[in-house]
Amino acid sequence: MTNPLYPANDCVAELRPEEIRWFYQEEGEKKWLPFNGYDSLRLECKHRELLCTAAGAAAEAPATGGSGDSHTEKILVRGGLFEADIAARSCRPIYWSGKSLKLV
Image (tube, rainbow, N blue to C red; front, side, top):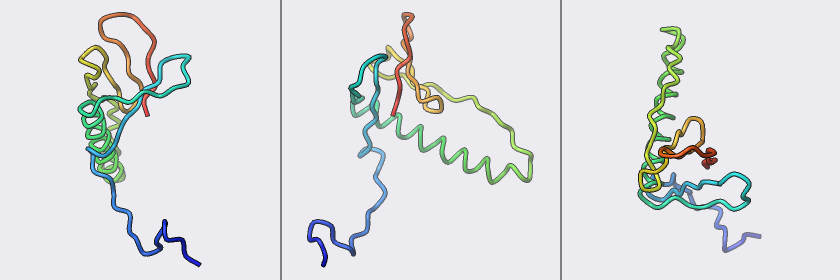
């Protein structure tokens, strides 16, 4: 018996970057808060860029020994008040000292 809500022959396509929403969580809070659309788009594009770079580096590694470059560009988010590090999955304030936020 098939379920009409979940047709067996439907193919799920990969989501486009503008369809992805990134979230952050403040220290000690249970609730995840969404980034605005522009910030989410920039975070997702950088995330995909890092995935492609990592895949390319993995393919190169046997031939060149791999460079192991872990430097990643920070992305300004939340009105330029925070910088996000995709590789570390964290976001920290720029102009004041404060705890890092978790990214997902």
